[in-house]
Length: 360
Length: 80
Image (cartoon, rainbow over all chains, first blue to last red; front, side):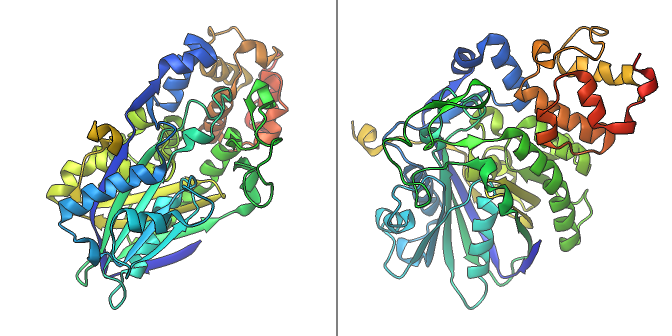
């Protein structure tokens, strides 16, 4: 794995925004029946998810979170040196949505802005990039926006994905701070598994067409088009069992922590069965494994920060916590960070209200 | 682990009555699903330290096929 130790930057604050619409048991029962829906929620731990309306994008949710965070931090807009937008659901293929967000947030032109196309590992990658860029002598203030609105890419008739994913957007503020404690990152990739979690069509390898948008029957009676998300759940589960326990072990060792040192292990909220299994394997007690998937489902690259905002915000506002973060998913890609975080401005997740509705 | 003990684990996984499986039943008729697949993978890792190949798992059609995936970790002498 790629090892990267970084000093001289810290998390100044975090915020998360979710859409208003909630879907859950009733929608699942329509797909798999009452008993099936009960089993799904028991196994995955997902009781409900937030789903964006067709005119709301991941960038909208992230913009909302970023605006609230900048206000809470009293960061003026012309002090932001870079904006990193991590997403798999950009507003456009071209240009980078980060550029659009720079203007929409009213940031100054002296601001680097770029997108990162990563899913469930994306938060840790975004954090790694931002903390490295904010090391002493480089940039001073960076916004890392992570969000996905995968509901727009999911077939409601595909049981392998339809009951798992929720939409969310988050913002994390990174600031140069010479006195900040070191952060240890471990990052890895296995692109040989790229087909296990993929939207096959809509980009250069297979352009969107009248053919690719047609929904066909697939494996196990699922239906989707080539422009919708496919996930081989068993392959992803095996990948996580193979890589994540070792990832956590390696990151702890790199940071010089025993496994009982972290106050919380914030893992990508894939599903409860998997997370509890990994926790057991790594000797992580249940009270150190915060879960937000009950309320929000699997929110892709937003799941780690939304879990911190939902479950640990009160503590981090008051004091510092030692955190192990670990993300894993599409790519296949994985990354973990060991860091001490806080006191910091960590806001509770809020429901996004589109400007048009707020005005009305 | 004996074959009988293994079957009890599969019954528990599939929410079946204890003693209802003999080993040669068709899994699909016993509630085998994508949730059961990942549940079995977690079980195999926890009980035997084995990360089961999803491709091999997809070819299993009976509880005995699942036991065969785990090789000599399941005692064959208890199968009868």
